[in-house]
Amino acid sequence: MTVISGDRRGSFLGVVDRYWRESDYEIKTINNDGDFPAIYAQTKRGFGVSLSFGGEGQAFFEVDSPCVEKSDVADSTTKPTAPSYEGMENIPRPHLRSDFWSAGAP
Image (cartoon, rainbow, N blue to C red; front, side):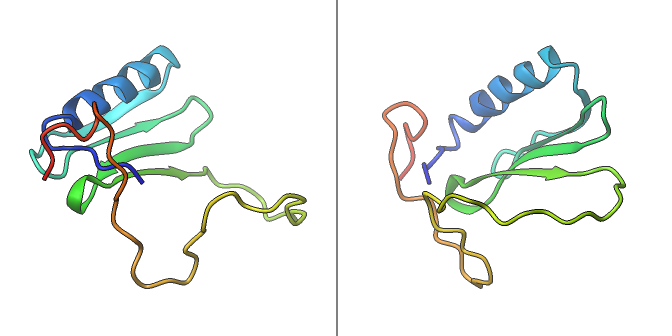
């Protein structure tokens, strides 16, 4: 996971905000907190999407589905390319550095 510095979080949110608006997502709320900013939106089909920041510049994308009927889903036919951290209490902190996104981060 890439460290996103406090100086770059607004830019990261701006890129996502522009894409969501161009995709006709309805922006519900923007949290301009300096350390833990976030943006919340909804798609035309009712999916809630959000981007929020946690400690040490870790970005979280989340999607909430609208009400649906339960259905069976087949198991994946491919192996994951990254750890899922499912059931883990402590998710690792961001540790990868980007010349741009991590600029100014300790």
